Length: 603
Ligand SMILES: Nc1ncnc2c1ncn2[C@@H]1O[C@H](COP(=O)(O)OP(=O)(O)O)[C@@H](O)[C@H]1O
Ligand SMILES: [Mg+2]
Image (cartoon, rainbow, N blue to C red; front, side, top):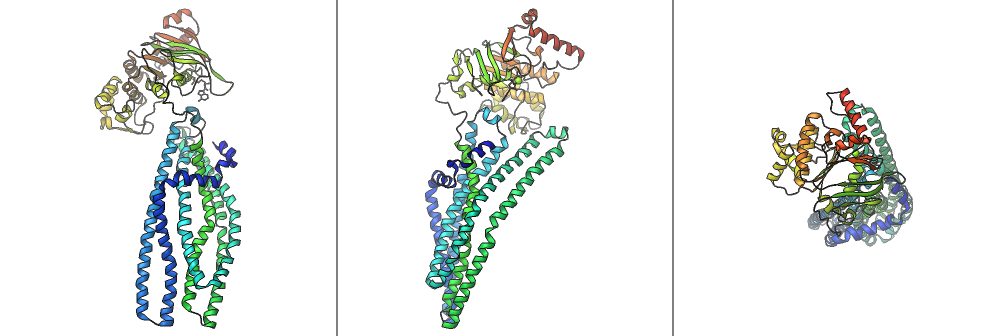
């Protein structure tokens, strides 16, 4: 997706103004009631600030000019009240904005996640999963940040500034004019910094993604990292990524703050001018000191919001990078759009056929070329052949993770491309070589096969999968948590939990992809018994690594170079003395050479 980002660098859809407009209309406007309340509270708070500067002037007059003690006390009370109101209003609008912000974050996270669920496998095989983690976290938060920046700038800073400017102009019109002269040059210089900030923020985002990538790879592959003593390699990789981001962050800080010295100096000049002129007026012409103090207070207080407003563009642009990253995900057309409007698959006998199927992952590299075979209802059909022949690809096509290039896959004569994916996948139970268990308990993992399954069903499935006994040996039984990859269970145990999950689904078609290939002979025996339960009366398609595990199949297809080159029963194929017989003899010989080990892989 990095390429995609580079390509769309000047995409008009992602220009700052467009992004802001879209954010406000799509995500901000729905909260207009809350925003109105927040604005009102901010106006109250701004009013309090302006009034307080007026009060300070009054206090000075009462003290030094009128020498009025009750008046001073009265003003003290008013001050207390004013700041109390300001405190309440500030609390109110801060909480209000946080509520809206958190809602926007949550909505965006949901949007990105459901978007991901509608992507096909191709989409994921082209990207690193940590990219989504980065997009989800950065993007969702950035949307809120931008909206709040705008609301706060307009609501808090602009209103405060207006209030204070009114005080300034009322108190010292001439001086105010001088104070405002410094503003334009400051703005012009700030504008120049913005473009660079935007570019740096993007680099920073990509650097951050690479940090996540390395972290995630190291965690998932921790066994390999340790076994191959790759710690140093990984550390170096990580160091490089971290250093790059650190460098960009420092650059960002430098450029972002480059405005500060300028702003401070200009501000200082303006204050000095004001002090000199007004001080002269008070001393020389006997003007009212309260007026001077009010003006000075308003001026000093106006400085912060003015500075924030001047920097708004900078802040906004670095946050907009995140927003763009979010919209890029949301906008890309789903690669596996919902097809629930298609008719559902109606399975009767569950006869599965592939009819002259062609398929490729990458152009001009045909993986399947004229693949045809039949899996008869209630029978065990086996696919064997050298690794890379396209067997697993056949399963992906049956589950419609991908669509065929030519030819069709049918179930009971219905072309599966004409039915909803949901109904198709509901009719299939799949057990692969790599078992994936979700974070949760053993019970939950079995129940994933049939959401809402009863306890009895779960136990029955576990028993049929020969998993019940070992589950009961755990102190916490079915409540035993299994980790991200089910690391607490042995390979055979994981596999039997997966079979229980497939059993409880009770689907008419079963796909087994080398489900016993990773197991030792002992657990293989138990898993095979579990699988016999699973397959009873079902249309079963099994990819086998070791030929002896499927020698009893009703029909065996030898898959080579993307098509079925031979088929028949085990003994028929041996009589034929073709490819199958050759494989068989090879495996037998290897087995004899190393008798205690289970039959080695075919390829
Ligand atoms: N997601 C993928 N993207 C690109 N090529 C793939 C993908 N999956 C498998 N292949 C390629 O397709 C060929 C067949 O793979 P596969 O169906 O897994 O074979 P088998 O299961 O028979 O070992 C292999 O050459 C493999 O490199
Ligand atoms: Mg395979």
